[in-house]
Image 1 (cartoon, rainbow, N blue to C red):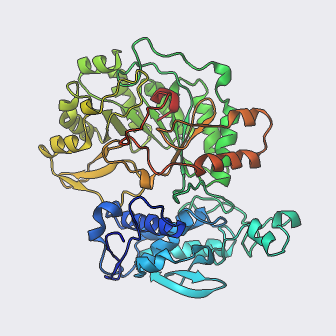
Image 2: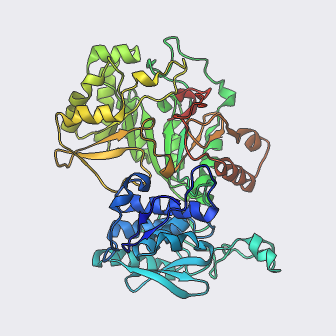
Image 3: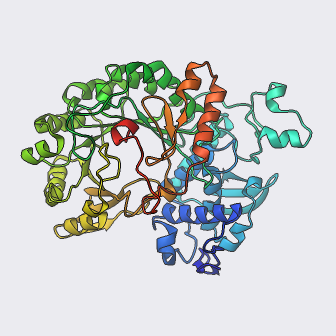
Length: 534
């Protein structure tokens, strides 16, 4: 048996893990759910902080916890597994359910409901199983959700969540075959009208992009081009790369269609436009406008080098872009030229200011530290960002350069970055990281923060919620994946939305547990970062 784990009720239960042996599906779900619970209450990954599990369930959920649980449950209300299961078991763990009980639990027969200031997990046709209260402020969230549910603006969760396959197995006709518009497993008509964004942004009819480890992909990274107008040393050679021919790139119509399927049918709630340099796409502003007008509007963000933001920030904000991440590794002009091989620092600085003025907030600055080049600039860069209200995020250099020259021994680690910053500031971890790639710290007590993304030395694969679509229409379930799933060929061959959604589901279903950089068999992807999309 594995090391005993303390449960919310103060007891211990086995983790049921044995080295070298596969875990049953129920155990995998239980362990994933426990890890989700740890992150939910702000303790970080369970496998590293198990000893810190609360000894008793909290008195009541707060506003943020309540909203997040409702959003998670809504996102997969008509399909089994994934985020819905984790929402259910999170409620159960709050109530003191033992891990040993969770291992044997069949979540397919459970559902979440909300009434009278309680979030309740019910079994079967309505038997109350466990419940947890919400505090006074959070009751407003529940009341709003209940009012919307009564008017059918959100789906009713007081159901089991079985699909048409199980329905046919019981000798009953498929709802699709009978012409019903109700979601599978629902006792109510398909909801009409806009879902209240203050409670959840997810659609009623949705089958989540869930992999074999229970992770649901809700964050879609979409590359718009592989071209770039900088030549950063850790990304590509000075002469650039052979760019994809224009006919191979997805058109705006194709992008809008695929993203619409992802948001309306597959539970995607965030879309990040990347590259290459996405602002080099001539139709960027109109594309953003079309994405912002989707029936199930996602949060829209952009990763850019900032060179064209002085001209594009205002039009992009008007089109519906929510925020930007801008790459900037140093504010020293000579070091900037050395890293990017271009003399464009002033344009990046102007672009950051333009983004802030346009309201593309929070403005985040992404920086990669290179040993012997700019690693000693990190404290000054943080000061510079704090003075201007930008949020700095330090990213470990990853093995994604086109030259395949990455050397782990030369990489500046997250631990080294924390040491440098801690010599000048007091860093306090911010709880509640969830699926975010950055571990965030308050600087000198706040409110300023700094994020550190340790993709290599402290991977966060267990909580990953991202999936990527390349500029030429290939789906990648991981940044470091060596295989891709082709959507472009099916799209251009006339595939309908059902087939494209199925292909996306299959592409994510086989996602590996982790990127495997520490594995001796790890091989760097053939595509570079500019060709994948960050």
